[in-house]
Amino acid sequence: MPTRDTDPSRRQAPTAPPGPPPTAPPLGSPPASTTTATEPAESWTVGRLLTWTADFLKRRGAESPRLDAEVLLAQVLSWERVALYTHYQDEVGEQARAKFRDLVRRRAEGTPVAYLVGRKEFYSLPLTVSPAVLIPRPDSEFVVVEFLALTKGLDEPRAVDVGTGSGCLALACAQHHKTARFVAIDISPEALAIAEANAKTHGLSDRVEFRQGNRLEPVAGEGPFDVIVSNPPYIPTDVIPTLEPGVRLYEPHRALDGGADGLRVVAPLIAESIPLLKPGGHLILEIGSDQEPAVRDLIAAHPEFELAPTVRDHANHPRVVRATRRTT
Image 1 (cartoon, one colour):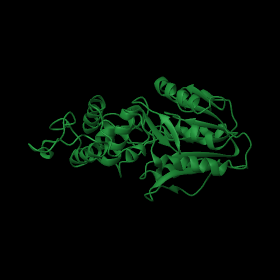
Image 2: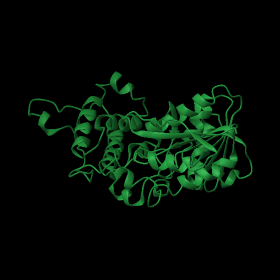
Image 3: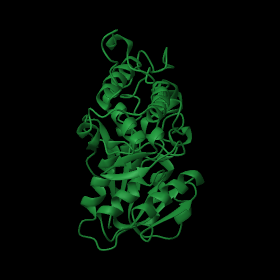
Image 4: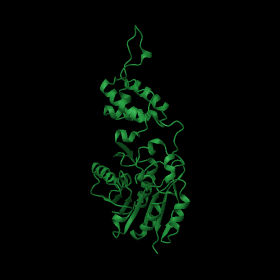
């Protein structure tokens, strides 16, 4: 499924999870503390709104309150974020404040910012997202890095993305390898609709084909492929209730749940990839940080594969396991 940063070793629920704010943000009138009988009320400028909202969201447990405030206000005003600072003293009108207040309330209740604004950037590629897909996370970009390194000298490499979600992996790979061709697979028709729209937005529909189905079934018998990439569901079922509320309550569980051991999709995907990869072809899998030994053992059980060193993420956690189909 699409990328995510829901690793149980790193994404536990906060000690004070976000909940409904005790009072709605007072964005309809200026703060009473700044008004005296002889002093005019201070207006709600861009700067005041950002400062107040960042403090409010911090108290509600947001991990990046200032960034959240900036993204939401830029969305309401239809500005780029940088414009907030070039218009820091501009007053924000009542209608915009009402829209902003609603977004801030929903963020305080736990709704992820990406779902509130309907987009998320991945590998410098802005993508449409909705609750039908997982929100792309920076750690999944290591899959793209590996793909680009392995296919640098290949002309028109054929590749498959299993569990494409928003399309982030296939589209980022195709965007940066100008001749790569992908079949992107997902079991969810709602996710595929999002991914297809993203492909059209970025002019990649001619090189990325979307198919509905389970794992590699939609391309059975259509090999050989140069690369198979996947960010599959890998969160163990009993870990999902411990994830932070923004993930647990809003992101699609079907794209998270990897079964009792987190490997329900990974194990058969490894076996199914063997007949579909050409000799010298590559399998690139994102994994949970505590799954490295288990996934490497699963791959090592197939003599057709030669394992490569595990790739670690920005936090030095195991993040990507890669294997190459032997030529002999």
